Image (cartoon, rainbow, N blue to C red):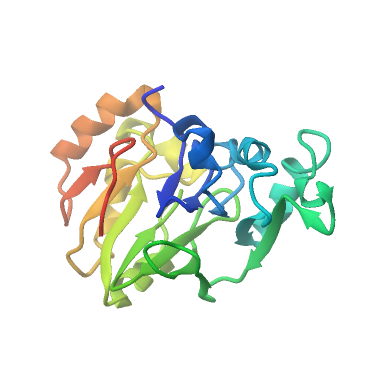
Length: 246
């Protein structure tokens, strides 16, 4: 219970991944979520999406928009809204008035979500190196940007983007397994404290770095290894339910 799966909420209206939306928010809060950005199809990033759509059903004249790349979208439609594991809410109540709308996005082609209290949100998907097609996200609102790498093993392009984003205020990246499980991390394309250290050397600027995705059985071990690691920049573990401002 203290280790929910991956979800972030922006301005109460945009969810970044859907691992825990309905585990963390009340029904009224869920019904305020009108846009969901999906970085990849793994269940810890998608599993509450069907329940969000069900809980939001009939609460708005407008469908919930789900944004992801073509390859990710194919998996979302095939595995989640397929009339087998869950109803196809893109045709409920009917195809003219769906409850969900799928929005295909292109790699490194920015798009804007406008209807947010804090002002327009610009989103750019950047490919990262994971076991399934996965994108990190460059999120810009107002005068600052945040990069979310999503799940990734050693990668390169998103660090290039970080180094050239002048208004970058923070980076959120992963660490999943302790160093003794490096072989597992390499096969599954996740990071350990050792490979995180190597990744952070690709970052050529000083911005806060926040960590997520600690695998629950190894949390204490990961904390000890991170505290002892020689990292180029300080890192901070994200705290569940905390509000962060950048």
